[in-house]
Image (cartoon, rainbow, N blue to C red; front, side):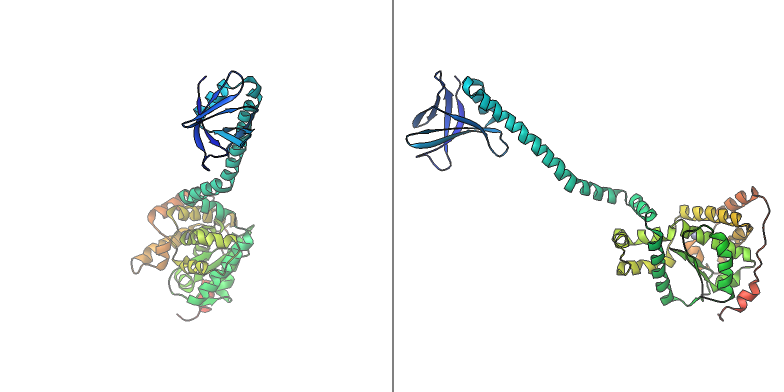
Amino acid sequence: MTPFSARLFGPQLPGSGATVNGEWQEDDSLKIVSPDKEWSATNLSVTASGFNAAGIKISWQDERGEYALFIDDASARELCQAAAPAIYSPNLQGASRAKSGVERRFRLGWALLGGLFLLPLLLLGLLFLKQDVVVDWFIQHIPVQQEARIGDMVLAQSRLSMQLIESGPGVEALARIGEKLTINSPHHYRWFVANQKEINAFAAPGGVVVVNAGLLRAISSPEELAGVLAHEIAHAELRHSLKGIAKSLGLRALTSLALGDYGGTALAEGMKKLTELGFSREAEREADQEGLRRLVAAGIDPQGMVRFFELLEKEQQFAPPEFLSTHPSNTERIVALQREIALLPKDWQPLEIDLATIRAGLPQP
Ligand SMILES: [Zn+2]
């Protein structure tokens, strides 16, 4: 029969074992040959061995002590199994069964490892590849109450850089028009006039709307103010400002938002950037559309919105208003609005708001 290679451990053998050849005999004994010695082993115990039960261990005892023969090499294992006497077959089959059982456990182990380590890694990879998608998803899932607290932070930050007026005819006018445009909103809106001369306005997350005194002085009808408000409210309702903060700050801020940590310095830095935030053209188009929808629903003449953009165009010829850096006003935009408005019924309720009273209540520039 064909000999198979193996490693033998036992009395008077090196601690690391001796390389030997095993050969099954006709009398069911096992002949083991090393370069300088020979054994004839009987009354064998055959079991699976190795850390994954892939090997075969054959052990026996003689007058010198206990011997153990390990067959780990795959081809040697096959030779050993093929020639083994029938009495050892069940044990050898048991060994291969034990092996497959261990393999099953190992596969399960890998699956668990996969779940624990690979899945988060995969998600992390996805996070970097599809950051915009992740940010968008995240933004859509920030609760309204948390958004309001982010609004508080923006407000606190704004007070550091500008004087905010919280009462008087200007603020009352913003609130009166604003209420018509925010019916069914989940936010509790707060309206402010900033003592700033530039034609500008912005909406912070959570329903904070700030309109510059310079804008209130430049417009020629309350409908124009309604147009700006509708556009800014649309930005807030569509969570553009929130998205802007999140994108300019990155995932670190998202994490702190998720954990409810609004005091983080990273977040405060993002707040500073809010008024300089440039929304994408797509976001501006969306805000125009949503603003127009809100004006129509409130029964306010949307031509005011168009006239406001025309005012910006005109102002740009002298000195580019700050508003333009964040709100790209162009003829294409005006044309798009006019096209939509032309299809609407002309049934508007005029706004009973006196611009002269508003201007008289503003602090001196
Ligand atoms: Zn805008």
